[in-house]
Structures are given as structure tokens and as C-alpha cells.
Length: 174
Image (cartoon, rainbow, N blue to C red):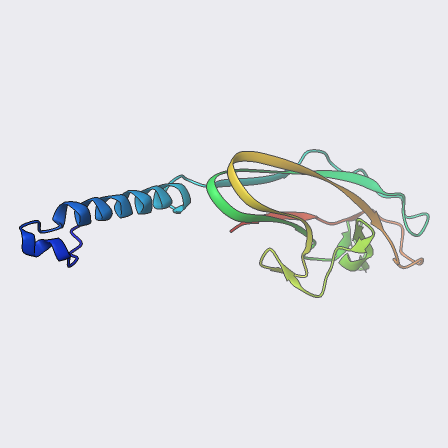
């Protein structure tokens, strides 16, 4: 790339191209480093999320139930990212496995004392609950978030059964 610039010395036989070439070269070097460091193609970005333990069955003999801890580990490898957002959600009610048609609303499941079902969109998922957000990521790292899970405000007249549901984990890097 050549950057032309008028130079007062040009009438004295110096065209000024050495100075402007050096400026152009420095500009290209700075832009190249910025693209290499911050650009999306500079390094393949990876993001993973997983629960590091499982939850046991909740005994529905008190409201709220005794809480359990779910550990969520989020790992990333990036040249640079503005943030990572970690969310949980349940996409369907808890259903009985014994053949009864009664379900337990997903909103009865609580994360850190708040219903897992929200009225907003987080991590690109309607009703997801944001559990963590970390800004300005460089290189490889991870975080583990301990979530307190319990159930509250479920019907006291549930038929005896084993009710199952799935807590989904999602992470988004921007």
C-alpha cells in the first residue's frame, strides 16, 4: 500500500515517499496486529459448558424442597471475546413417568432462590435464567458456578409418581 502525501520538501528534490512509506508501513503493522489479536479468524474460538455433578431425586414432602447444588463449568479458548454469558432453562414441565397426566410447571424449579423461568430472553433463549457473565476474555480459561436448585410452590395434591425434567445449560460468547 502506498500513501501519497504532499511534502514541502518535494520542490527540493525529496519526494517525501520514504516518510510516507514508513508511515504506511507502521499503519499496516498496527492494523495487522489488531486483526491478528482481535480478529475473529485469528484463533479458533471454543466454548464448552457442562454440569460436573448430577442432582438426586427431590422429595416432595415439604415446600420448598431441600436444596441441592449443581456445579456448572464453563470453559473457553479465544484470542479475545467481549464476554461469556451462562444461562440455565427448562423447556417443558416436569412429567410423571408412571402414566399419569399431571405435570409440575417448570416455574416451580428455582435456581439460587428464583424461579428458573424468567420473563425475559437470556443467552438467546426465551425464559432462560442468567447465572453468570464474565467480561473481556483472553486466551484459555474457565469458571465454575455453584447453583442452588430446589422446588417451590408445587401442588400439594400431586399423584404419587416419579416426575422428571431436564435443566438445560447454555453459554454464549460474544
